[in-house]
Length: 114
View 1: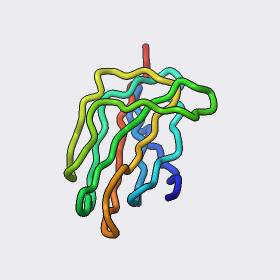
View 2: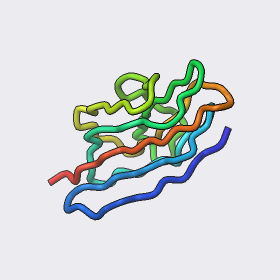
View 3: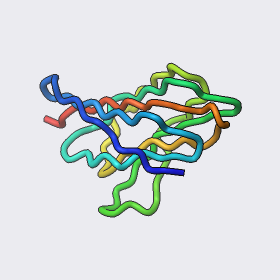
């Protein structure tokens, strides 16, 4: 189990995309601090593996120790979920199940609150 870093793409005005790659069974993503942004959608793709599942979680703690599930867990690759404009302090993905072939990428789309 590892915590994977994310990359950020802010090439579009008022939008940001955070991408966590190489998420294996049991991994989570480093928390993305939202600072004036709302989560609009998230997407999972890659190799799910047998029984694989990934989810996106949120926490309002400054140093998160507890997390809440946002929406439903993804159990097949290439799923896109609307996030109903979630505003939280921190967002992260977590792979909750899978096998030795599980390797996922999660992309979260954020919009700046105006």
